Length: 248
Length: 279
Ligand SMILES: Nc1ncnc2c1ncn2[C@@H]1O[C@H](COP(=O)(O)OP(=O)(O)O)[C@@H](O)[C@H]1O
Ligand SMILES: [Mg+2]
Image 1 (cartoon, chains in turn brown, green):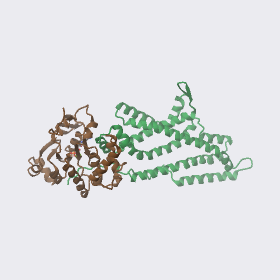
Image 2 (cartoon, rainbow over the protein chains, first blue to last red; image 1 turned 135 degrees about the horizontal axis):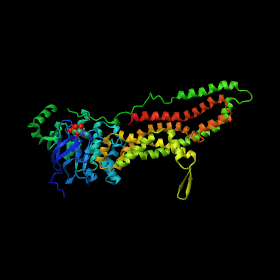
Image 3 (cartoon, each protein chain N blue to C red; image 1 turned 90 degrees about the horizontal axis):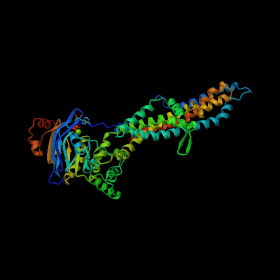
Image 4 (spheres, helix red, strand yellow; image 1 turned 60 degrees about the vertical axis):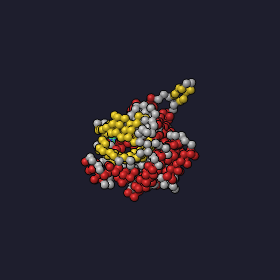
C-alpha cells in the first residue's frame, strides 16, 4: 500500500494502551493531514504524553492501529528506526545531550543515523541554529543555555532529521514565563512553513492561533474536538467547559 | 497556568560529596603517623646497646627491601584493577542487556563476587587455578602472584560491574528517549549518549575502589606472595624477633600505604566536587 498525501499523514484508530492493569488510552482516534497542526489539551494524567509517544513507538500499544504515512506502527515487525526518521519529537525537559555542544547536538543524528556527509550536516546545523534564532550559541553546552534556548536547540535537533511530522509534548511547560514565547514563536514559524505538527500544550492562546484542530482528552478518551473557534467558544461537553474555565 | 508536574531529573541534582565520610584520609593522618613512627623509635633508640643496631639503622637497612615489596603491591593492585575493570565493564553492560538470559547471568555473577569476602576469593583463585595453563602447545606458567592478581580482580570486577550499571540507570530516561526518537540504534544510544556521560559518574567510585584494592593487596601475604607484609614478617624474623622493631616497621608500612593512597583520596574528592557542580 502506498501512501499519498490526500490520506491522513498520521491516522490513529481506536488505540488502547495499558501500563499493567492501568488502562491509560481507552480507544483514541484522530487523523492529521499533511501540513496540519493539531493541539491536544486535557488535564494532567489524561494520557496525552502516552498518546504521542505511541506515535513514534516509544510506547507500544495493546489495541487499535496507528498509521504514519500508511505504515502500521502496531506491528511486531515494525522497523522503528525507519518510523523515527520520519517522526521528530520534542520533550518537556528538552533532553539535550549535555556532553555535546548545541551544534553537535544538532549534527549527531544526521551523522550517525543518516550517515550524511559531515560538511553538509554542519551547514544544515548552522542553518537550523539560525532558524531557531540562536546564532552565536553554536559552541555552547546545554548547561550554559537557558531553558528556552535549550528547547530551541532541541527543536533544531529534531528538524535536522528532516522529519515529515513533529511531536511536541508540553515543550513550554518547564520554561520560565518570559522564555515561553521564544519557543512558541519558533513553533509558529514551523507551522507557517507547512510542517505537520502534533502538539500537547497548555498554552490556550497559542493553540487557538496555530492549530487547525483541537482535541480535548480526559481519562484516556477524546471527549471533544473541533476547529479552534468552535472548540473555545462553543464547547459542549461539561468536562471541556470545566477544564477551559479553570485554565483560561 | 497549569503546569504539569515537571520531572526532577537526577542529572540536575548534584551528587552530594560526602564530606563527613568517616574513612576519608586527611593530610594530618599522615603527619600524625610519621610523628608516631619517630616517637615510638626514640625509646628504642635510647635502649640501643653495642650489640644491636639502633632502630633507625635497622629501618634504613631494610628500607630498600620493604620499598621493593611495596612496589610489588602497587603492581598487583594496578594489574588486578586493569583486569577487573575490563571484565567488570563487560559484566556491567551484560546487566543492562536486552537479553534477559545475559542480564540475569551477569546479575548473578556480580552479586556472587560482590558479596564474597575478598580473602575467600583469593584462596579460591589460589587453589582452583592450575599452576600452569596449556593453550594449544604453549604452556603459560601461573605463579602465585598471577593467581593473586586474578583472585583480587574478581571482587574488583563485581564492583566495577555495579558501578557501570548504577551509572547507566542513574541517567535520566529522557536521554534514552531523546536518542531513540532520533532513530539511534540501541548500541549508538549506549556508546554515544549514555556511556560518555557515565564516565564522570563512574570515575570517583572507581578510584575509591582502587584505594580499597590497594590496601587489600596485603591479603596476598596470607597466600604466600612476597609483597610488603610478607617481607615485613621476614625482616622481623631476620632481626631475631626484636620487639622494639615491631612498631616502627609496621608504622613504616602504614606510612607507605598512606603516602600512596592519600593523593588518590584527595583527587577522588576533588573530582566528586567538580562533577557535582558541572553536570
Ligand atoms: N511508564 C509508565 N508506567 C506506568 N504508568 C504510566 C507510565 N507512563 C504514564 N503512566 C500513567 O499513565 C497515565 C497517563 O500519563 P500521561 O500520558 O503522562 O498523561 P499526561 O501527559 O496527559 O499528563 C498517568 O496515570 C500515568 O501515571
Ligand atoms: Mg504529559
